[in-house]
Image 1: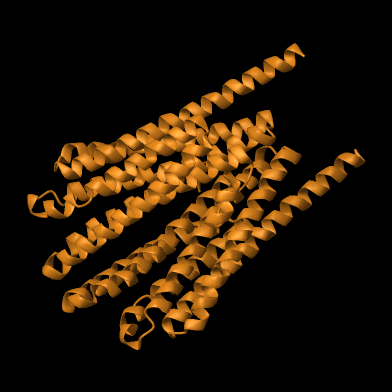
Image 2: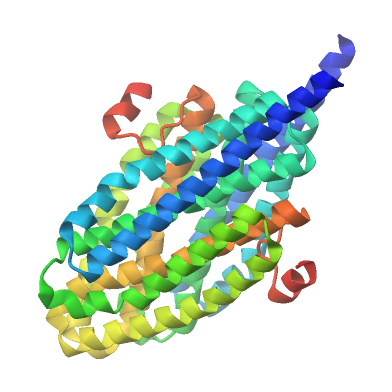
Length: 231
Length: 231
């Protein structure tokens, strides 16, 4: 019995450690996104280069957390809620890593289009990016507390992000029509806008994993009504 | 001993069944992509609608294979190569599902821009799409045989896909510059082109899972030299 508790205590500590690593990874990704936005907004090439340089840290965290998850499955043979936590983590880190790639993509635009001439295109990304960072922050918060109510709030934010994205695309399209020779540069910015919009989708994915962990239900691909019934 | 073999035989049959389901899902996704391309190329709205309608089949397969994987982990407590197979499958189906989404996206362009007027924008997607389908076909083939040599071939195809994508983007940009009022429509096609190019990246992800299964090494985020050393 005592031995059993010891094993279980160790196991809990291991799970807790992985969870902490996910939150650290999430914090780093949030910082990367925030730095990338600042770099673009303030035309700060050094900061943009730092974001690109630090992407490998995000990647390394993904690989190491993934390894820790596989190890814990092989060693501890988790079932039920423990297994769901490990599964939720394995998927969450994939999405976090991809959000990290978005930060790098934005940073690259800051590096490749440093001239103040493009500034007006950059500026239009700022509110969108800020919105995505808020969403990521809230979903990480929901993940830390495994809080399904907080998840519902994150879903609402995605509608705002989508609306903001539509506005940005419209604005950028008018720039294109006004001055077709700028199309290649504006397209770069538009790709970034789209990537930022996709951050919202990835945050929603993480919401789904949180619900899967807490409720034991896979809500992917369900319609809004079915999701509301589960929440 | 006999009992042991029975259990193990059952376990093998379960793993084999999951693997077969992944290949069926892959086949369906390949078909979806192929139908979407045909719909776009031949302006066949009915076929495009079928692709959109059938997307739920891909989604359902993702969810059911995922469940089967979690069940097998909980019940059979796989380790070593068995566990790696399950992990590889869990990740592969995520990428397959996203490739399915690309098919839907292309089908939507076919539905929303049915007029023959846009035909010239559509046509430019065909070789790109064909290339992506070839790549998906080969990676599924490599997955079926868990063949690392075949994986190396898939990697090479991605360079061709990227080159093709660059050519398409350039072509579409000239259309934009020629006739700025067409920008919104051309952008739609451009998003699709980008999504198709991302199919190549997803196929590469699947290559990484195959290598992870066969070699037991996680090659994500490694540079080409490091990957070649492992292959």
